[in-house]
Length: 360
Image 1 (cartoon, rainbow, N blue to C red):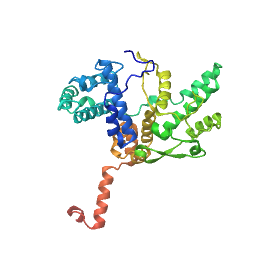
Image 2: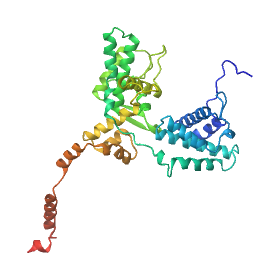
Image 3: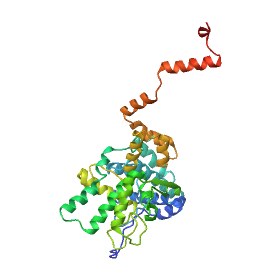
Image 4: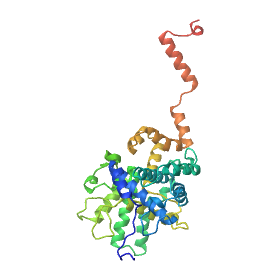
């Protein structure tokens, strides 16, 4: 029997909605991660023929190699280690939940995990999450939209809408860099907050209050954009201009802005993706690295980034400190062995603890 014209293929495996509802209650982020991971698993299952394109994946259709096959499929499609790890963890929990609901035979998930470990190695050597560090080439994107606007003006092709988009995107990139903010934090900034202010308060991870600091450069580009935009009833700084109703940009929209610039600057690969891939987070990494390289104490960079553990900050940015800077710092702050010895001798004399040779 044919499906009706408005039929939408299932986006999740069978029983996944109930699992997500139960397991994702801890936070909105957990719910979102579980849902996106299981959607990816459904896409994989359809690509491998475990499920038809218009049907939800049935647990009974999964072979014992399902986790291994999923890992190899993700690896082939160039997902990052951290993304692969997330997807696999969620899918394993889903399979264990299915076992608990007696929708899979007992021991199925353990069998799948053992087969997966034969491919990933122990302890998951191929799944160690990489440290995403800075890349100075992101500087080539920093003023792309300013250049684009100038070029469109020269060609007499700059429409009012495109001008607003260029001004917004330029302000967005400089704000991402200046604040070292996460995409989800930067999109929260409101017009009321930035009027004459150098800092704005947003909700960071786990909804903790966090302050973002704006540079003069970022403030100027935001002011230029808001001045051109005028009063439109929307209090968010970064809004959509492709619809009549202006809404706050989503995190995905911020990714699109960065990707558009990366495609234009670095060109596309055979699959149409930027040859050099960046996301909003890359501006955060570069800002932090630049501050460390300029001499900002690592504990202050930790506070700026809102890292709970300073070891995360140190392991990500301190190893990249240039050799020349280390040499300068050693010359500035180091003491010679003679000075250390003299200081020790002076201290000993003052305390009356001079050694036998010194008392003669």
